[in-house]
Length: 343
Image 1 (cartoon, rainbow, N blue to C red):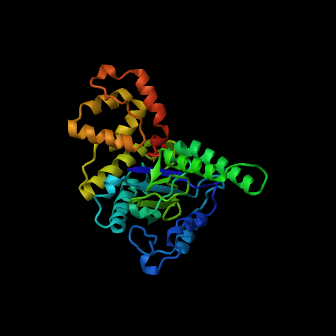
Image 2 (cartoon, rainbow, N blue to C red):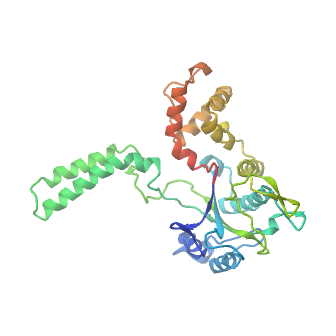
Image 3 (cartoon, rainbow, N blue to C red):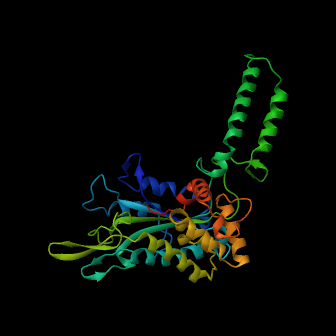
């Protein structure tokens, strides 16, 4: 489970309208019949139009400054193992989203008019998507890039020969291109992976747009707050503030596991990924204590996440040297960032 929470920006400034982002989320509906479209939904409603979403989010920004985010985007990406537990991808993910947003609100240390805030106090809209494309930052694209550069140069040389600007054997150059295409380390269905290519397999995920202001347009609820759950004294009165991100990520996993009867492996947990960054000794010590079958699955999950693993698995804690930790931590930067530890 990978979750990101981001304030929507337009260049270096915060977007003043959600219309652009809402429109972007409509891309998968283009060319589809009405019955095949994925519509926006919220805690109680389905089939909400994009126009209504933009209007409601944009109209809920009272007293927010231009330099403040008007809304946040939460992206929830279940792993392929988690997706296998779903019977009906769209309906199951909708059900999960509604439970997840109850977790989200519980992670704010806030009250409204002396009562704890509830899911009814937030204004959010969500949408299920089923496709993903490879980005330039993906490991597969980055590691294929040296081959892409050589292929591009060879194609450039072929065009020069065709225009009569240079002399050369076009067929020989085409053979070189073919060999480079096959040598590229990352392939999908026999084709070199490139930026913009659609990812194979089940890629279902959730996009959630949540207003910075509460549903009454009176109080600010920011998951981007630099404060963890704490209290501050204002006008002689103690007031709660902050959003507990760690708690939210952990609740999100537990809610998924409870809802779908999922048995989460150690390497899939938010706590394990966080320990990998901050306490690698604890991470590997915990890993080595797992039963053999769970340990095998854990290493498989790590490999698929792009975490580099030494050819020989360490057999005792003494072998887990600082040099190994540093190597692993350098190699996992991109994978860890995608798990959204922090905002």
